[in-house]
Picture (tube, rainbow, N blue to C red):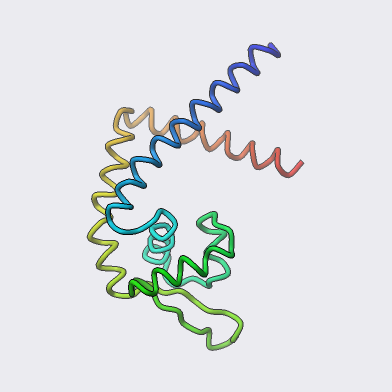
Length: 149
């Protein structure tokens, strides 16, 4: 079982990695055409769907190093897609909040973004998507468990 299992695991790892890269390439090209980089889009999408967020917590939610958040927030603020709001209770905390211009922008591009993702995934049936989701989640949770050992 040992060597065959290892070979299968390596193959699956490579296939998943390549699929992920291919999907990201398609989606990121679309986002770039809209004048954003993937990180800017992720921050804007987060603020649109989840409401205002403390700057300190954005990085963890979109998997970005905290040092880069300030730069990304600056760029989105220059485009007037978000604004910084000081926390009334704690001067050390600043929130990022999407502006009306930011909302209008994300609403204008999001349907095409969703469609691109659906076009990629629609090679699978509904049942296959569900199965793939569960299987990939299982791998992800196991990876987290391994990391904590």
